[in-house]
Amino acid sequence: MYLGLDLGTSGLKALLIDADQKVVASASAALSVSRPHEGWSEQDPADWIAAAEEAIGALVLSHAKQMAALRGIGLSGQMHGATLVDGAGMVLRPCILWNDTRSHAEARALDADPRFRQITGNIVFPGFTAPKLAWIRTNEPEIFARVAKVLLPKDYLRLWLTGETISDMSDSAGTAWLDVAGRRWSPDLLAATGLGEEHMPRLVEGTAPAGQLRGELAAKWGMTGHVVVAGGAGDNAASACGLGVAKGGEAFVSLGTSGVVFAATDAYLPNPQSAVHTFCHAIPQTWHQMGVILSATDGLNWLAGVTGAKPAELTGELGAELRAPSGVTFLPYLSGERTPHNDAAIRGALIGLSHQSDRASLTQAVLEGVAFALRDNLEALRAAGTELAAVMAVGGGSRSQLWLKTIATVLGIPVELPADGDFGAAFGAARLGLIAAENAEPSSVLTRPGIASIIEPDRALASAYGDAYARFRALYPALKGV
Image 1 (cartoon, rainbow, N blue to C red):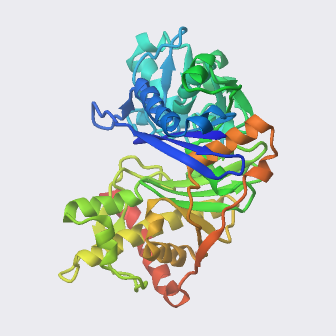
Image 2 (image 1 turned 90 degrees about the vertical axis):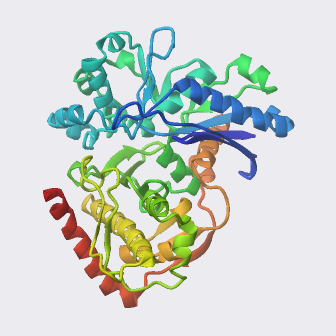
Image 3 (image 1 turned 180 degrees about the horizontal axis):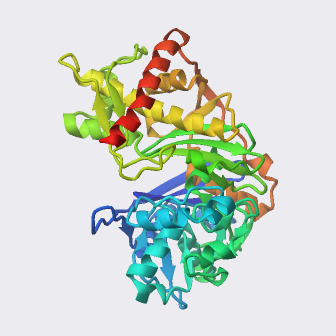
């Protein structure tokens, strides 16, 4: 048996699979976010441990025999979080999360140092880990002086599980301290924030063993043998492992709270000026490019909150057939935007409202606006040298066939919908646990799921949506100007 633990922002999921990769059971525990000031976003790492105890404990209660046969654990987690521990492994302050923007000035200062883009292949975004430490160095010097290790969220779970400070390449690529081509820490970039390699965890590939479950926990949960903990992955790389997106040209689009266009690459292909993330994959000698929009289903949830209707009710009013563009344009920058604008200050807008703009037209505008933002990401990936023939769709928004039709038409490529199953980050983490525990060949484990349906672009509406996308593109600079 193999266990995947996915530490998200709103909860932790534990997923148990067998040697045939069939899902045996799953359990989850909720998490909350603290926002003590505008732009701040924090969590107490003790809450992660409590959530893991709750979820794993539920599996032990319901599937004691299977959990006793556990051989491997894989970890997936929200990226970029700054978890600071002292020499005794004690947490020094709440973790500053990926969506915390307090260090925007520090991010700009680090990004102005040409070494960062040259070595990491990425813009230094405010959400990355390095600017958070620069902020702490200035604003909380007494905390900074006591930092022994900087850990990413899932790697703090590993410390609890194994007693070791280790991280993987894919998650570490989002810190702005990793030499992404060389897959190692950069002493120069660490020194730019007053740190050294001694402050960093040891690096391994996501498929490699990275510690062993402590005997105390194994006994507590009734496990009878040695349990290997894999290097694991950042959440999007883990999702890619769950979907079998492991080779160059394979890709997926995720419609979750945020939106992601993720493409695996067989070579290191940085293009930081496009605001595309170029990170290590969880698989050795493989990288990935990723465009990120900060509000995908969040945009629909916002409209649902304003109108008092449920998201499914809103999309249901539109029917199943794709219509011509609504004439109303939604810019989904409710929390700023990453790709391609790298603009934490920009905010969303509805443009082109008229007396005829009813609730359905606003819903259609939201679906189109998210699709146009994803097209921005696709174009950024193209500028970075990656052409995609098709994408798989995952995430809560992929339950809307109309939204998938909109996205396929706007992107101009087919969208593939996987067969029913759990192929998310927890499943990908469990697969990495299997590979590490059994020394398995990654390609034999990271297979792609069956495809339930393929949504083709609507060629009859392609020109109309192309014109609507051009209007969308023209509106960002106008909005930024005011």
